[in-house]
Amino acid sequence: MANKIIFLSAGVVSLVCLASCSSLLNRTPDQNPPRLVSSENLKQYGWDGQKRTYVVWDRPRAFGGVPDNLRMTGDQLCQTGGFERAVGYHPNALSQAGQAITGGGYLCSGYRLKESTQ
Image 1: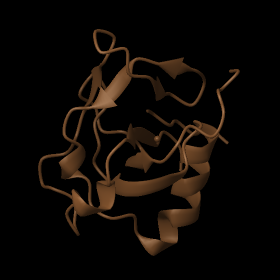
Image 2: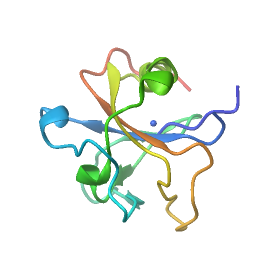
Image 3: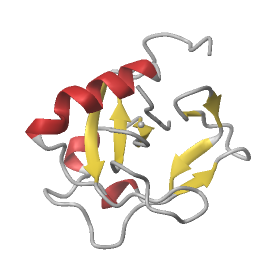
Image 4: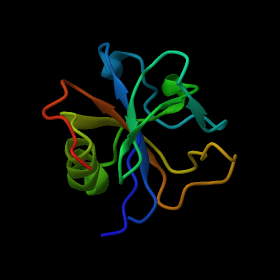
């Protein structure tokens, strides 16, 4: 499976949300997609599908809800990154380089279930 998750379908990306994310999200994704940005100065970790790294979404409120047909995939990707579940999805989420991420991006929420060893 060639998945990508961020702090996370090929190339999907996500981010942890520490607050009650579902109340912050739109029902539909914003027209202006969220973009991954460095969080090294904040020391907030993300997951890139291979290792934990310093990235976050610049606009978590740009995510819409997770479509029913993508919920299982989103939850699995978030759990792979050590988070509980997917709470948001944006089909046009952008990488740090500003390129569309194939498969979109997920916003993850919940406790870190495990420390990734990858």
